[in-house]
Image (cartoon, rainbow, N blue to C red):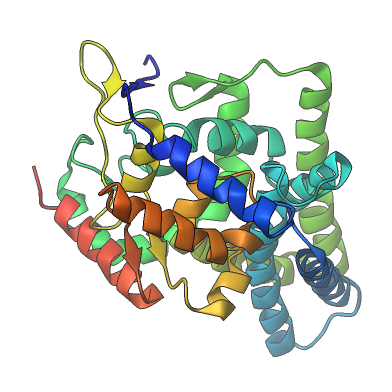
Length: 357
């Protein structure tokens, strides 16, 4: 499938004005657009708790109830490290230092996923062709889920808003043991070819996978036994998968976001890139500081999609600029005040997709 192109709207100043105003904010306030000490402290804090939990579980064999609690915490930390550290690092916004951005990005390999596949799937494809069926891999959950009207409907989809919550727990397991390998061997993300991998890329892919298999599967089984490992591993990965899925899906698959279809003949998208990003993206719970802190600002998804190279620590401030500019240019800014409102909208949207033609 040929990748679509965005309409070049002659005379449109929306995106240029957005960039000018946001750039001026950093100049006037004499701030760097990357992370700061508070982000670095959070990264170290999360990693230390994760490592401490791992060491305690594997080498000190705590009581069952305590072990399950620690596995839940490690599952939450898996998602939190991905949201806060890896995500900013992969976009080059964690630090001014390229080295520390690479270190932050590398955390995805430590958590079992491939940084190379993530870069192709997320940074290149998802951030460009958001919510475009057949291109954006984030909405390709066929045939189990129908995420937009252009996807084929099956009878089971009538109940997808009910069983989806169980399905979401499987995200991390499928990601680690199926999706990464499918992309690697097909050398494609969906229908889009990935960038040609170097010899080092191939080495890094397999080193990360084998390292994870040793640290998270082989060594724990040797130390605590198969059944204890299996229960702990499932608790960790299922909880992490659920948290990751919820945050990812609330940002794009709710009632008010759109799923543009390129023109059949020209493959051109109706809007320019910036407007497309705003129409396919939604914010949620942006006034909740705890949620913002835990999910690495991904509840400010509009700001992130417009300015992925700006660290999430700045999103609360630049959101004011973006919201004002959208209002002036009559561009709808989608936002849910509470996280529960976004969850209800997501559920309602899935229910609608399970019934609509």
